[in-house]
Length: 170
Length: 111
Image 1 (cartoon, rainbow over the protein chains, first blue to last red):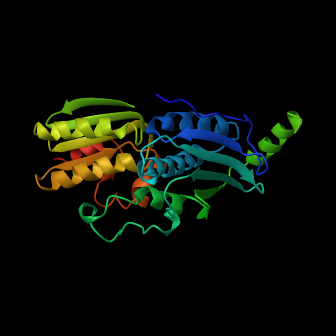
Image 2: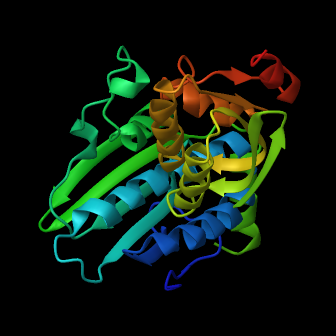
Image 3: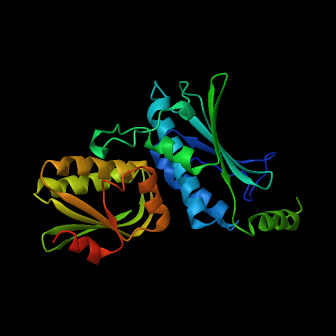
């Protein structure tokens, strides 16, 4: 299995120096995404629920990219940036060079219909919209960029973040 | 991901542990549909040790729910941690796929 993700910074980064993962378009990368997120997020007292929802959003978006973004089926790099913004949000950005696709515009599943009559797609994007404070898309040249922000409520998160930065001389 | 299967009377029980994601859900899909092909129609899915589920896992359950509608079958889910239960609620699955607190309640619903 491919294991090409690289963790460039061990500490929770800020907007100027995000933690960047470089992933291949292969579902096998999900294990390394999870391992990295768990290690990074655990240091900052995030609740199990916040960690779960961030992990879920990343997996859903990554799986969509791997499954639908590339028409040539060849190898592509997918970039994931993680950083903290204004002491309020954990921000995750996913970037790919696939066909243009705006998930923020994607129609939500019709909840009024019985389960058996609903379209199967779109559920993952629906989760991202419901669970994240912000969720948006940009097309930059040939690149898709999806950003989501999770509001961090857990007491102690930012105290820990800033004491770590001091103790590491940042 | 670990999937344990056992029988509780005529109820086919799946005990899931670890992570049910887009990489591991095909294995669950395969086992669930194999059980249905062999005639099982009453299922309990025990989420006690499941840490994580994504839409890929929910799709397997939706697919099984659709198939069972034609055969009077039923899936009961139990022992769900609150944040996983919330995923089923956000997906609007909880009104069609019943979630009960524990195995006893799941078992009783088949009587």
